Image (cartoon, rainbow, N blue to C red):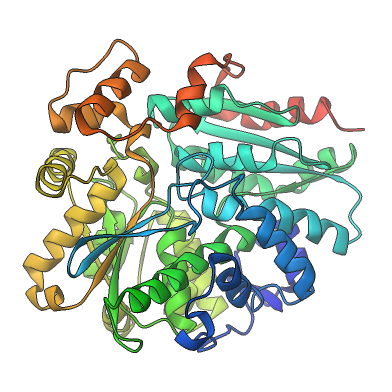
Length: 499
């Protein structure tokens, strides 16, 4: 398959797109010809998650033979990496409401769903491209991507990974996971700033010719594990296809019956994957984009204007504390009728003014598929308490934002209550002990681990062994820098393994 930039005529093959992540003009790679209407229920009925993954991913990565792609998929979605056989189980809360649990991987976050596979894709792409340089994965994280990427790439031959995260923008457990990361090819650095600061810097760095020359001289090239890389995005489509198959298998919907999807959204990759699944033939009706107080996306879906000129909030759902959603550019490309020149103009406008708008006609088309809602931290805690007290089901703050957005959407559009809805559950609640204790009025402990013991005792939810094991591990990465020193930090890391 050919991939093209969202900003120009630049067109590359899939292995080049996997290896480089970002187009040379700063755009994101999208399929030059999208595989529309290629998935039917009969193709995935009663299939394993691994078989569904192959059915989907063969369309995005046809260069790889069936045997090679299946081998990568089976290695990624194995008992060693996931605690459930069905990988992404669908939990029924109400007759017309299900929760898609995406947190049963090694790091208890939905990022495991793609980052368990992505290292295999990247290594295969490197071999296909005849690339002999070492690959340095550069990734900014608002919490979950960092640990999942570190775990996926630790000690993978020919690769190294540098993670940047904001000092005050992740939960204590997310920070512990990154600071105690094992592996000889990893480096983790905190920055004084927010996620947008780190992400914007890294995107500039990818098109910085001077920096590229410096690392190339040491036999190193950059790539990314953020969802700007198509190798991160495509595997996320799989679990929406799997959810559709399971809904039909359970008798929750008929094979041609539409269902809605609610996604707690930060960088827009997860909900874009659901949009891709819809384009491929999954009968998704409405895509509900759920936000916290950083509600730039909510405003876009209501007004057609994306405006980052607003206060940035640090919330109890930190992985959503984002104002510049990278994958929104891919969505904008489709909104613009796949017009790369118009997309480029709009992205330049966003960079220059912090704001862009689409036409009224474009907004009308968008609103046929999407809506947006947001809730505050206090509302988020109220939702956690309500769902637990009513149904005995414990939500993490991000999934609670999605549940709260669903409730608001029902208030605005009661007719949606007749359609089955799937909530994407993006993290295990134990990654966020403080808001859970506050929501359920549980006495917090002196450490996050003690708080989690209290939560487990009250709720009966088992302490995930991967999180419990963190207590015994040593802190390795406690370095904090100003955001302006990120380039220097990268070059210092390159010096440890470059030629």
